[in-house]
Length: 120
Length: 107
Image 1: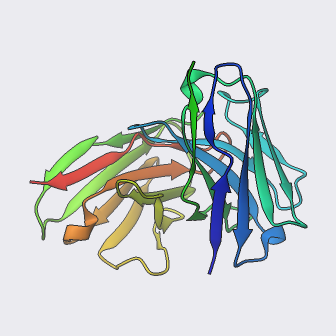
Image 2: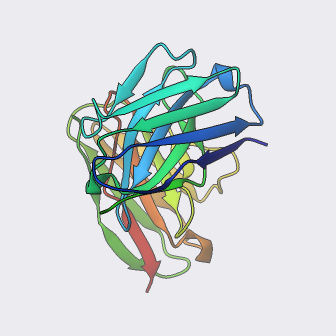
């Protein structure tokens, strides 16, 4: 069974930092591109970042580029998102998402999310 | 960036109704379009990928179609468990973008 379990969320002050982790199991992690998608309270979905299966290619939403960094450790079946210079508008639930297709992104499995709250 | 415009933003419907949700892309995205269902307090669930392919395990009352930059999600006969919010997503180019969502509630 595919499982994605996020951790590392919490309350942080504006300008602060946080590191999210996603532990993957039930599939061969090293074969899949991975993503982070977030959702502000009561709002819609926003794609945040993606990373290729070997970690060489990374993409970011304009709203987070230069502040967030995606990475992965294929030896530990883990995905990470480093969040720096946090702003109030970064508050939300951050989902770890698997992409099952290398040619056409298809987000087939989602974690339950890690809550990030940015507030003074 | 490619903008995805979903309509309507909300609708009220009854069990057994046929309903269609529309998503328009601001530029050609071919069939790089996915549909998701999200229920309150839950993660999104993939329904349709590549515009019209039904994800494994999803009931056949869900279908997707495409014409140029216009995409639609149709539920042929609404069931009680279908009351939820639906999102389209383009995956043709980065940044990947979602539509604003369509909330389906009980009339």
